Amino acid sequence: MSYIKPISLTAFAFLVLAGGGATLHAQVSTPKEAITAPLAIVKKAPVSENDLKRWSHLDLVKDTIPGMSVDKAYAELLQGKTGKKVIVGIVDSGVDIEHEDLKGMIWTNPKEIPGNGIDDDKNGFIDDTHGWNFLGDAVHENLEMTRIVKKGDDGSAEYKNALAQYEEKSKKVLEDKQQVDFLLDVHNTIKKELNKTTYKLEDLSTITSTDPKVARSKMVMTQIFGNAGPTFDPEAELEDYREQVYDQFNYNLNKDYDGRKVVGDNPEDIKNNHYGNNIVFGPDKEKALHGTHVAGIIAQIRGNNLGGDGIANNVEILTVRAVPDGDEYDKDIALAIRYAVDNGAKVINGSFGKSFSPHKQWVYDAIKYAQKKDVLIVHAAGNDGYNIDETKNINYPNDSENNIKEFADNLITIGAINKEYGENVVAGFSNFGKINVDVFAPGEEIYATVPNNKYKYLQGTSMASPNAAGVATLIRSYYPKLKASQVKHILMDSGVLLPTNVVLGENKEVKPASESSKTAKMVNAYNALLMAEKMSKK
Image 1 (cartoon, helix red, strand yellow):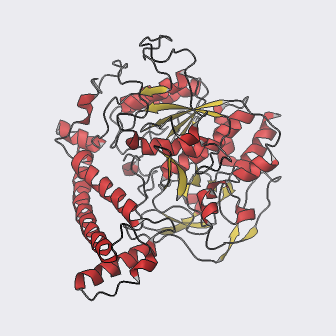
Image 2 (cartoon, rainbow, N blue to C red):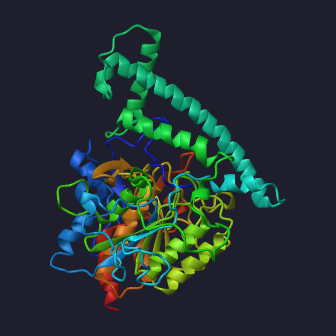
Image 3 (cartoon, rainbow, N blue to C red):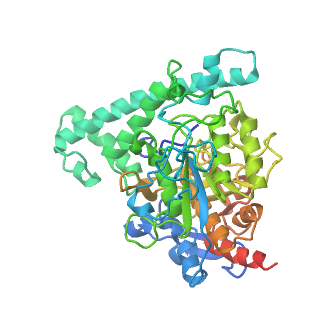
């Protein structure tokens, strides 16, 4: 599936977020200079609003929150040091490059004269001043399984698998549509009763009506609030839910919809490779929400009292718009990776993915090209709660043609954790797998930039990936001689260990942490920089 839509719907899906105030034991891994293990970690409850906005920067020992120790790294390891500027490619839905909290953090093509209508750098892309938009004016798209089913039965196993998944997903979206319509009616009933557009849990207690519909609506919304996090806004999040479900119904699974016709290329021809335009946030800036949030996690200005803080402080965001609302085309992803590499990116973040990849070799070749050019690709593990080591659950793009042996050592796959260290620390939606997920990073309730100078909490492995990419950027900034593969293994080896047992996947099974990922660890900036320092001296 694509990750364009935020996974902010846990309340409506009746998923209980982790909570409580138990005493837990954390095992903190190497390097030894950092923190020794084991340590008793007593969770603070509740988390303050300020801490929540930047919890991924906090430290497990000092703050009792399993952040990446970014603040500690800046305070104790980076004071007085000057890093090298690092270009980070954001392959996503587009980025609002005019956002107030990204000023000075946007890549500008030094070889291109803006707005003169000439391909000054002769790379085939006219006026690509801040990146490129391979989607042109396209916004919505089918899922890849829909595109395969539309082509008809060719007798292949891929077609049969796509058809089975398409029918299952279509049935599910009809059920979701019924639920969202029901919840909209509940929400509108409460708004009318309270005479308010939005409301809090305490407002529900003031409702005394004996009307059966009102009483039922009050009961439903009380349950939803009980399952929601502290940032829950019924008006905004129900609209997110409605949009997600209706977009699946109208576009992602609609065989009569063709989102590609406005682009003007042939998506089956990789040699037809110069198309799109230079408007990197796309035709509707609001639809660049996902990419803008991802960019902010890495690069929003630190310490300016606006929104949240970025992980890296010496970074330029190069935007490549290639991920629609639906599944990305393999061709666009392959060309986007190559574009970012050719324009100097040393880290590329890919917060996208899908279950089928008809032209996966094009993407594999692009990953190998990035490896030759010493570029690290950081990729989201996916939001289905699946074990992606299983062949039926492969999450593309990946770095293995047989789902076991890697063909490149420059791609790292990131799962998501939440802020509650303990058995439930792995986010319920996060994919996992001891072969194909490398390490975890914060991905639940992450506060960052969205278009038009706004900020928002979003969640998904889409948010975990740029958190890890931000730490990779720090390493490449302060230790530029280290290779992409070295940075990958530093992120993996220097992490903080997950608890001995963790709850994993859609079935919420308690399993040894060793089943979660290759490392059973969480990315830690402080430890990573210590390890980078040591490695750089060898």
